[in-house]
Amino acid sequence: MRHLEGKRIIVAISGSIAAYKMATTIRLLIKAGAEVRVLMTPAATHFITPLTLSTLSKNPVFSEVISEESWNNHVEMGLWADAMLLAPATANTLAQLANGLCDTIVAAVYLSARCPVFFAPAMDLDMWAHPATQANVKRLIDHGNHLIPVGNGELASGLSGEGRMAEPEDLVGHLHHFFGESQGKPEVQQTMAGKKVLITAGPTHEPIDPVRYIGNRSSGKMGVALALEAAKRGAHVHLILGPSVLNPAAAHLQVTRVDTAREMFKAASGAFEQCDLAIFAAAVADYRPEQTADQKIKKTEDALRLDLVKNPDIAATLEKQKQAHQRLIGFALETQAGEEHARQKLNRKNMDAIVLNTLQDEGAGFQHDTNKVSILTAADNKLRRFELKTKEQVATDILDVAEQWWPVKG
Ligand code: CTP
Image (cartoon, rainbow, N blue to C red):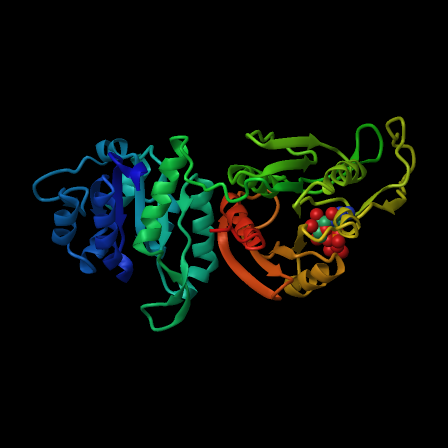
């Protein structure tokens, strides 16, 4: 845990039974060499005593902006910190922070802080699943905060499901990982060293005339996140990227820009034979105009008819050339009956795995920085469901699944 040495961490606790985990978390942070200051909402003090936490953190604990003796300077605290860890983050505190409300010292310091903020929600499964909570989580992520995902398991209510706060080791691990990355000393193991990865990403644009095209809302973010994560893990990555505003660059990353499905097909075909893993993350236009007009089509008729023809299916065509060592991952973006369609696509396109996301999930799909996916793997016919996460974290989950196909020796 060397990346936490000397780091100044604000631990902000709100009122959930999971607050008991914060004693261990603070001990781990101190042991890792961090300096810790603790803030609590008044409700949190019912779950764990400030005395315990001030003893462990070796600093006074604040639970009021104004106490009988003093006014606690939230601005100074916000500027002091290298990172703020809000854990447990209750539904109420999430709602306050997402909306800029400010009636606790936790909220005041959060609004003043310039440092990265990590938040670890904790609540009952129905509260967690409620659209209001999910919207607040998404908003906090959109504001640049880092979600530490909830776990699945027994809850204090006696129910079982999603909503459990991450364990202390996990909370500290997130901070450690973050500081490792930002100091340019990635802890990421080179688990894909020597592997060649081909990724298609982004939309395609199918020209109608020199100024118009048929396209879709794909941003390319998911495929780009996969390419960067695979490169970080030491793979040689060839990214075939359609028209996207993103312009990724990294060591071991080769990018080929294309516009149309046929260009993407050609570029991917050229790279396929060499690759160990192909990930088809592109939202390829299924059809293109049969004719592309040389000149801008003028508005002369009342109606305009476009004849469309099918584009090549890149994944399905390349699958037919698959060699024994190669593994293929497809995506399925569905608006209804997601699981059923994903299973059909897995079989039809003969993929080793399909990543399913449905536009029914708030915060998932095109244009968002977050995604909520399920991964269906062919070998064991298992469907793994994941939480709403940043696309970077989703990329990590997908590659973790893929890495199981090449067990690391030793
Ligand atoms: N795909 C592809 N080439 C195409 C169409 C799709 O490589 N011309 C890939 C996508 O990158 C994705 C998978 O196939 O990995 C499924 O794409 P999707 O658009 O969800 O499915 P389609 O096969 O187009 O089926 P439908 O549009 O009927 O859902």
